[in-house]
Figure 1 (cartoon, rainbow, N blue to C red):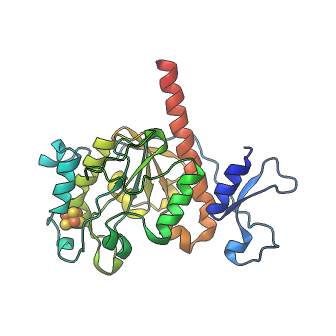
Figure 2: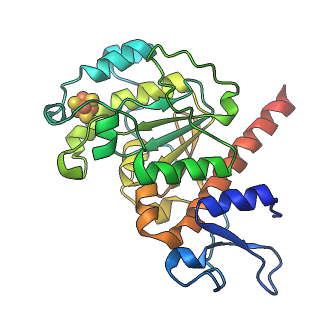
Length: 280
Ligand code: SF4
């Protein structure tokens, strides 16, 4: 793969560098040495990047339609239902619900875990340092979240191209106290909202970030490392598993693998588009 200067600059925003390693047939994407404290004069730390095998389909058992009244809600009704929800005990400690953000027909959907303190305060998913890293990752492949575009909020910014946009939602809409892990019954009670969001967005690709997003969507407790590197499906939508940005901030060498996951998702979207164009 050859890399333009623009792409190299974007990778640098993720803390990655394209290293033209002596003897290597292709440039290596690696974690910038200074990012792991090795000093700016050192060469990058090469991290083996998994070559994605052939796409492999895993159909998750369990719920694949939003339950009850949620199944017919439009964006405003869904937003109101989430804001008023008291279905689990998390409503007692939340400042506000964190519904989701982005283009309502985005081709890309990012599913995270649960709101943290900053998200609870601002009412938006993926803010703070992990949100910045996510935005840098998205920019590196030409995507952006439209800050302030909240589906169902009545805001009317006019996104240009849904193919370049994302919709970002969490598995849980309320913050667990003290940022503890979500409980199984909380995930179960909240999942109908996420399912309806996916039905409304109808994305071309889902990126499931982190353990609890994967548990909800794929019904799998396997480690992320075992599930990434192949294409799963959810509601017929291709789904790629990757690490949560908060985990990447604590484990810098995994950024190269996260980049590999982004490339797999991008390849999947492009292959689907090419297939659709041939069939048109
Ligand atoms: S986490 Fe989900 S199910 Fe629990 S109160 Fe919040 S919106 Fe309702």
